[in-house]
Image 1 (cartoon, protein in one colour):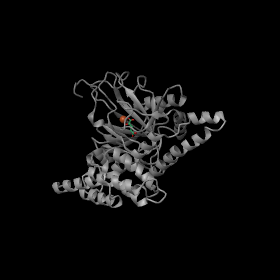
Image 2 (spheres, rainbow, N blue to C red; image 1 turned 180 degrees about the vertical axis):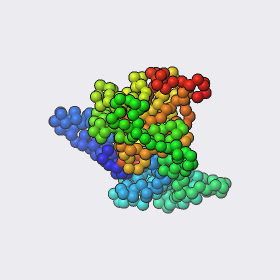
Image 3 (cartoon, protein in one colour; image 1 turned 120 degrees about the vertical axis):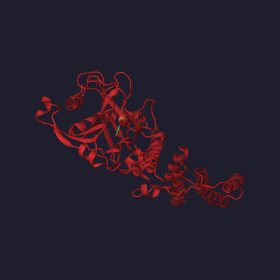
Image 4 (cartoon, protein in one colour; image 1 turned 60 degrees about the vertical axis):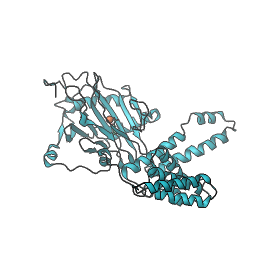
Length: 412
Ligand SMILES: O=C(O)CCC(=O)C(=O)O
Ligand SMILES: [Fe+2]
C-alpha cells in the first residue's frame, strides 16, 4: 500500500516471496513454537502472487503503451526479474511484450545472473517467431547458433524460419508498441472525447438536500452532473477521512480476491470484502446513501470495500442484470485518490471519472422498465501509480416502487 511505483512493488513481492522461504527453512530448526505458528499463518506472497504482479505490469504496459524502459524509469529490474516478467508475458501469449522483456533482460545480464544468454536467445527468437517477425527471429536464432553451434534443434528452427520468411509477406514491427484501440483503453489513457457545447451545458452542479430530506437541510451535499444520459452524478465530500480510515482498518485483515460471476477471474484483479451494518460506520454510510439518492437501501447488498494493487482493474462489465430485484443503481465511493490510472470509465458514452478521495458517483443501471441500460457498461482502469480503495453499494429494485416508479410506457 505504501509503495506507489508498480515496478518497486513487483520487486518487493519477489523479494519477500523468495527470501521468506529461506527464513522458514531456517527457523524450522528453531525450537520456538510461537514463531513457527506465526510463520504458518502469515500471509506471505506465493508464486501465484508474484506471477499476478508480473501480469499486472504487463497489463499496464498494454493499456498505457509502456516499453520496459519507460516502466522501469524509476526502478530498474535485474536480468532475472525481467526474464520472469517476459516468461509471464510469454505464457499469456503476449509475444511482443515478452520479446521486449527478454531483450531488456539481455541488456542487464551480468555474471551474477541466474538467467543465461542462451536461454534468453532461445526465447528471443521464439517470441519473435510467435509474433510473426521472422527477420528478427532469424537474427536471434543465428546468435543462438553462434553460441551453441552443435545444437541440431536450433538448426532446424533456423531453416524453418527462413522458409517461412520466404513465403510470408507481412512483417509486423516487433520493436514498436501499438496501443489497444478499444474505447475502454483510450479512455483509461485519458484521451477524452470532445464534448459538444450542448452536452457541456447539461453538466451542472448544485447543493442538494435530497428533495428536502431533514438530515440534509443543514448540511446539503455537493452534487455534480458528470454525464446526462445515462445520468451519472458525483457527490463530493460524502464521506470523511476519518470514516475512510475506519473502513480501511476494518477491511484490511478481511480482504480476499474479488470474484466475477464465473469466480476468480483475470478481468477483476482487486481484493474485497462485504461489510455488515453492525459496524456503526457502515450503517452511517448506508443511511447517507439512502438520504442523498432518495432510494431505499433495505434490499441493497452490504457495503463492498475493494482495494486495487499493481495493475489492479475491473474490465468492462455491467453491474445490472434483468433478474427480478436486479441492481437498479450503483453508488461507488472513492476512498483514495489515485496518482495515475484507476479511473472509472464508461466506454459506450466516453466518460472517465477520476477517483477523488471522499467523493462518490451514482448511476442507474436499469431503465424504468427493469431492463439493463446498455450505456452503463463501465470499467475500473488499471492502477498505474498509487493504490485505489473504493466502496460499492449496489441498490436493488425492491423497495423503490414509490421512490422510482415505473413509467406508463413499456419502453422507457
Ligand atoms: O473500481 C471502479 O472504478 C469500478 C468498480 C466496479 O465497477 C465494480 O466493482 O462493479
Ligand atoms: Fe461495476
